Image (cartoon, rainbow, N blue to C red; front, side, top):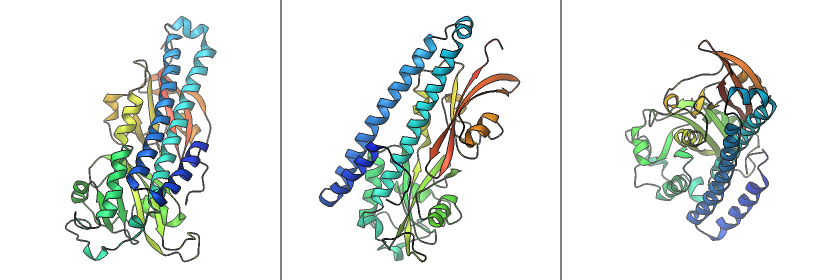
Length: 329
């Protein structure tokens, strides 16, 4: 695999199984098994988080109980946010594994219809290179952490995007200026891009890209780039995951990218706010250096206790913040 990070033992075993299956079975079966294993693992972690959060809430029924059980409460919060960080890191690694595995398929690696690229259609026609479109469609149908799957030509020109309706909605035809394209090509590795407003939907999106080379050795001085296979993360799914947690009315949890931009929010009302930044929070500044803990922040004139934890997000570092009013404020 092009990625040099360490996956969990379960993910490594799954990848090995899937590589073997690809030689003898269809992509549909491959992705079904991958998505089933991934979703089962995430569900188990979510239940653990929910159980821990419920227990924490029961131990914090009043300011007096918070005061007398301060150490226990802090311990529960720290455990909760660590579990969330582990869960998010696992989800991102598994998304990368799906892209990396499918990038090795012959139907993805071949670009047989480059001459059919039509700028009006922002890529190839709907009924062209159906094999590659089927791979993209199967990923989207089996794994809902992705919103779109697309392929870029070596110079960044769009080749295809699924769903096709999103391809037609594109407002650009070349994406060589995007950081995920530049990062994947310059590092020869899977790359998680910055939060952007997607050209095909107008929605916040973070793209994960895998470069594809004709050479088996991607680290040669002059590798031949075939294209970039990328998936746009569906941040609505990440929002819903946080919003399904059993939090108190005053608690709020946010996922934040490496620049402090909000990725997902446990607060339904605030989740629709775009371009919200936490870059000036001391808690974010601490976490982005790899630290975890808690600190006091003043937000809109109110003192808040903020728990923070870093997340290894492929080559970048994301942050999880849990925000709650200080007792007695």
